[in-house]
Length: 218
Image: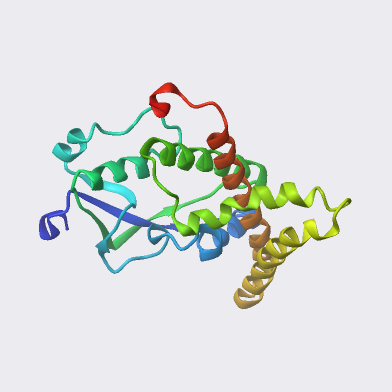
């Protein structure tokens, strides 16, 4: 495909799968648009040019030309590299012939900390390149402020409304998915989505508002 398209990087999409009840519910959440915002690399592609995907093949000359991975990143280093590749004029092709299978965290606690790291990584990417998050990323950013605002509900009842709307949408999605797939365990998918959203949003804000390394502040 690299030879046929002339792509500098060939990436694949990802299908999330699970074995236990919690892992299957997390997989359903991560395969959904509600959980991941409709990222192209989360869904099987017919083959197309993309901004980012899971790295499978890369021309060494392109990798070296942009400086490779930023090893100071603990998360989101692949998307950060893809951003620099595209800025330098290199092209990324997502294969439609295969995809990777990923098995997610098997506890909600570990899922939360994973997405906390993802949020921090995305914020570092935004800060490093002085760019705006995409719309599908900006919407989950509201979750942490909404949760904080809900803490004021004993004083101001309406402060809980945004939280209740968000929780209702997520939990309703889980129930609808469980009914459509006839699998009661997947009802936890709604809870998994909430954990993912909260961890990602919290991580992003903590990184954005916290002290920054001098190399990113420059």
